[in-house]
Length: 154
Image 1 (cartoon, helix red, strand yellow):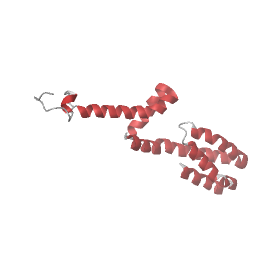
Image 2: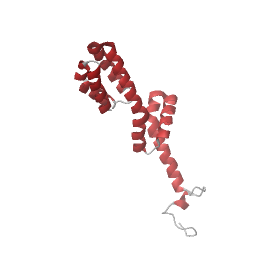
Image 3: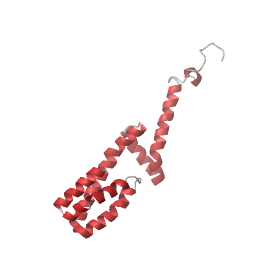
Image 4: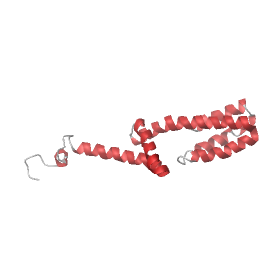
C-alpha cells in the first residue's frame, strides 16, 4: 500500500500544504512498513503522522490525511488482502471474510489471527477426506492406490 499513500500525500502537498509533500515519502514508508504488523500496525502508525500533519498543516491537513488513510485501508482490507490471502491459501475471498469475522467474534484478536490458518487447514482436511473416499462412504483402504486389488490377500 506504499504507492497509494505516496501519491495521496504528494497530491496533498500540492493541494493543501507544501509541507505535507515534503513528508510524503516518510509517511508512505512508515505506513507501508506498519502493514507488516497485523491489525494494529497501521493504526499505531497513523497517530504520529496525524500529529505531525496537525503541526505542519492544521486541521485541513489532518482531515485530508485521515480520509486518505481510511479510504486506502478500506480498499486494502476489503479488496486487496482477501485477494492476496485467497491466492496464498487457496481459499475463495468469499470464505476469507466470513472466517475472519467468525474468528474475531469467537476469540477476539487471537481468533482473527488464527482464523485463516485454521480455515485453510480445515479445507485441506476435508479435501483429503474426500480424496481418500470416492464420496460413497467406502473404506479408505479401497480408494488408496497402495491397497491390493479386491479379492487378493493384503
